[in-house]
Image (cartoon, rainbow, N blue to C red; front, side):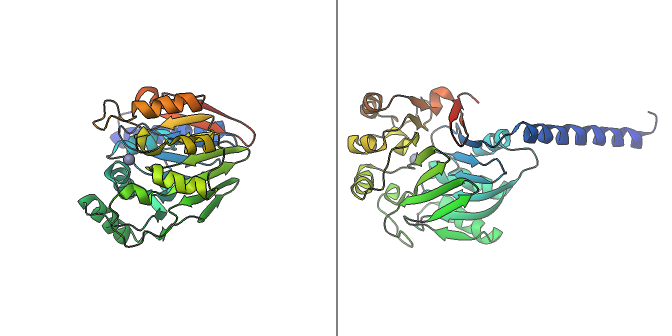
Length: 287
Ligand SMILES: [Zn+2]
């Protein structure tokens, strides 16, 4: 075409066709399954629950901006809204990526543990919440959330961390239990053995299908009593290749292998996605 305006219009029409075609294809492909993503964000945690009717819950964001490319793989190109972000605690390998998400996505609400931290990253998090006027809930055990057939409950922290500067930020970890049909999921954030012991003693830990291993497989977590109570069918460790903390600890790997039948890890398996129907689930690695 000689007229450049027509060329531009044609290019725009093609772009729209590709964009809508792509998101339409994703929507058509989608059944009624819940998608549970364990993103490979290097050393850190970032987990997405994506329901069939397009509600999203993001639990932690890893350290940097890797979460953004992972989210763009997981969600349709035109979906820039997340219903709920759960910031399990304020350490950098969980919080840093949340700040990136707050800049690029519309986040409807945030669960946080209310603890303070001395880092610039934490100050930025609080400033972004204020700037974007995002409603927040300071969470303690018993707080629930429901999107269709997906139900979640926080089982930790057992006491409020509101306004507290904890010696160990991990002690305030928001631990969540999820149920979708017959499948159950436990996401332990960076809980350590003393917290695990309290949760088991109070009868808050039950058998689950999928366990996010506590604290990247640190030697401070995944006690034998806790693993025996959870009896997970599949354990997922979110951990970076050759990380400087030596995660996961060899002693924890030995315990996990002894007590649980299947272990996946993001440093060797890459991003892991579970497709969960009301009566069954399957998973894929290297997604
Ligand atoms: Zn961590």
